[in-house]
Length: 238
Ligand SMILES: C[S@@+](CC[C@H](N)C(=O)[O-])C[C@H]1O[C@@H](n2cnc3c(N)ncnc32)[C@H](O)[C@@H]1O
Image 1 (cartoon, helix red, strand yellow):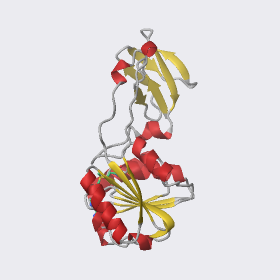
Image 2 (cartoon, helix red, strand yellow):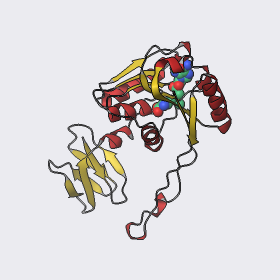
Image 3 (spheres, protein in one colour):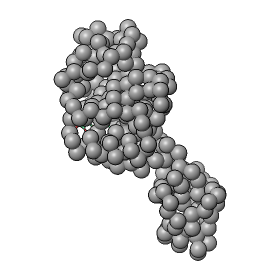
Image 4 (cartoon, rainbow, N blue to C red):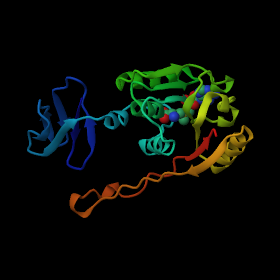
């Protein structure tokens, strides 16, 4: 799948087999070979092969999604490895589960629970678009219990993470549960809940991503930060 990048760095994902792309600077003919290409009016664009994150960022959205900055922090701070076993809830648009699925690779397994059929469909369509084969979507309520065992990681991005039972039984020793919550009070509640279950509270973080425009590439409009998204609460089975 090809990605076209305009002079300001904006990215456009081409559909498979697409031959032409109409831009504000004229028409681009998609080339077999990647590199710089000119529109018929002479503006230079760049054509490259789209990578996984390029495709993820073009995926459909239903409810609020977990962005790569937060998904990457989860992967980094839980020391997630290829081949890991993960449970996620709720699937929502499937962005977090897709990021994790891609990261842990074909030997790994993500099971993601989603209570609402319409969101389960968005997530499934995204998994198909991203060609992910190691994700299982369960149209089920995670507060009824987690069936999977010996998990390396459980990620909870839903209104009621403190209603999810049996987390320690589902985790393997050293495994993590990460709650993704918009408010600090919810983070505090989750820590209290996790401690009651005998889990070790490791840390709560907020990830701020700020992209800077530099003088020579006139990308000034990119300055500023992505606003608050959520707090990430890391707890561990010890
Ligand atoms: C904010 S969205 C999750 C977004 C997702 N992390 C992503 O990156 O695309 C929260 C989802 O949790 C689902 N949900 C809420 N309660 C649930 C439950 N008890 N069991 C399973 N899913 C639940 C909601 O229907 C909603 O789709």
